[in-house]
Length: 238
Image (cartoon, rainbow, N blue to C red; front, side, top):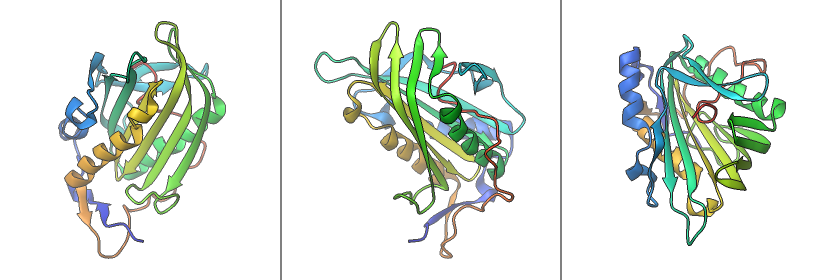
């Protein structure tokens, strides 16, 4: 099977202002998430920053690097069935200057779980037992994005309790990266994969073009190596 959509370079945001508008157009809102989702507090991250995993395996917010035009993370609370703990959902959309820059972000994610199987989101909140997988287009059922990454483990909070099931999904389409993560005891009631796919569809509608040739978004050349720095917007410093 060949992809039916490719990222059209002519449609992708080229300026910071275009990218910021694009992010707000495509990132999840309560209506897209569904399942009774409401805005968490805080609802949005500072758009002038993104999350970086430090050498101490703790996340922190830093200023945007030159290769990022715009990014935003939103947080939601989704009621659990019965008296269970509410599910916490985080979503992120990031627009890079080029598809190669976006591919570097993907490459960095795989290093994070290997180097830091336990991570500190913020004081009192931790991720443990993290494992990661990556699927290029056409692998393992990935027929919608240039690359699809996933991570799973457990989340623990001094105030929310745990451990709870934790899962994270990231997808790449052209110069745009979308991701969603879920922490909560009722994981089956809400899938971060579904939310990520819904955001990806918004992205594809905005910058995708049909392809009869069966080619995905242009492959960055050279491909990123595994020596890239680790960065993942939807986690640290939320």
